[in-house]
Amino acid sequence: FNDAATTEIYTRSPSAASDVYKRQHMLSVNEHVFNTGDILSTLYVIKSGAIKIYVTNDSGDEQVLNFSLPNDVIGLEGYDSDQYVSSAIALHTSSVCAIPLAEVKKILNEVVPEWLLKLALDNFKRHGRNISLLNKKKAKSRIAAFLIDTADNCKSLGCSGKDFELSMSRDDIGNYLGLASETVSRTLTQLQQEGWVKMERRQVTIVDIPHLSEAAQHR
Image (cartoon, rainbow, N blue to C red; front, side):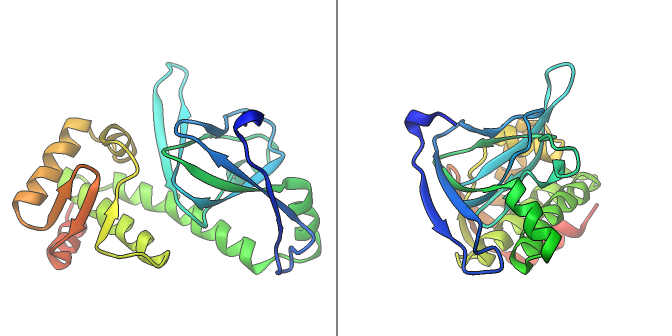
């Protein structure tokens, strides 16, 4: 983090982790939370915004692993290796709460907090969804499933399950789904022409959930 641009707010959790101090960091666009290979000393819970989780191969090519949203916990993938195994970058202005790993391990040795377990399970489920999306053959099915999944995530946060903003670019969506960005744009246009969705830049409105859900199930 850039100390000059970081705001730190200390709070206490009323749960079993009440002795763990959370340090909240404000992130600007394209600011990294952590990078692959960094020492894993902290886990992070997203409070607002959206974070892209990705890895870079030996050729320098980027592979998007996940898009993490509020209430997701990030950094757990490297828990056993003591190093971050991926990188995390803010897609737009975001905030995260930092939880020292030493404190987390201390708590886990005593009792597994329900709130942390739920966050961890939710986070890993998102990775499973990406594998499922990549196994779909047709671009239309992948895009439809992605939109339905994003809508469900927004609904779980108390927001509308039909109207939401895509925090990520077409390139990032394509990378995540294993599609060219041109294919993503063309497929979104097709879904809009069929009257299933409406789009204005990154703002999406799902008009026909039944047909979109049906398309998401096709291969």
